[in-house]
Amino acid sequence: MSDDAPTRFAPPTSPAGAPFWEASRERRLVLPWCDGCARPHWYPREVCPHCLAPDVSWRPSDGRGTIYAASVMPKPAMPMMASLVPYVVVLVDLDDGVRLMSNVIGCEPRAASVGRRVRAAWEPLEDGRHLLVFELDD
Ligand SMILES: [Zn+2]
Image (cartoon, rainbow, N blue to C red; front, side, top):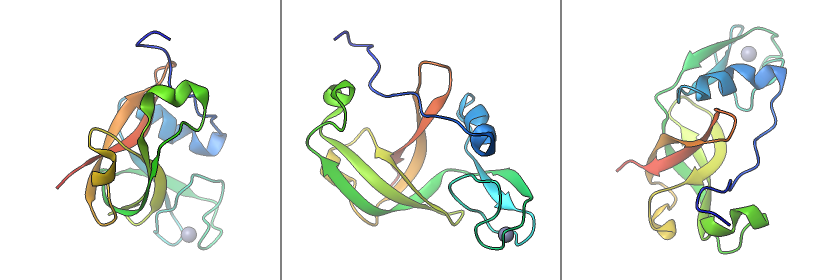
């Protein structure tokens, strides 16, 4: 395997998630906010999960949050991820008010522990989009 072989599958897209992926091309994080109840939600979907309103606006996020849960993966989930192990899967509570699953990069895996502050980082995908990952921020 060469050093630049892909280590990720390109994530599938949906119409509801298209604005997120388009912004990722410029390494900008945007989140869906409900126009009805003015609350953010994750993941992107056709209606607000809080009030079922069908109108969503996309707002920028500064990408900062706190690790809610973390798990160090000693084996790759897929063979193409073998060069990444050990890696950290986390649930991050963004300051905006949503929780999402991602990875923390750029640190000793066990340093990415519950309660640590993180900020958004971006991992390039082959098609010009970027995958949202996180770095420690404290
Ligand atoms: Zn709502």
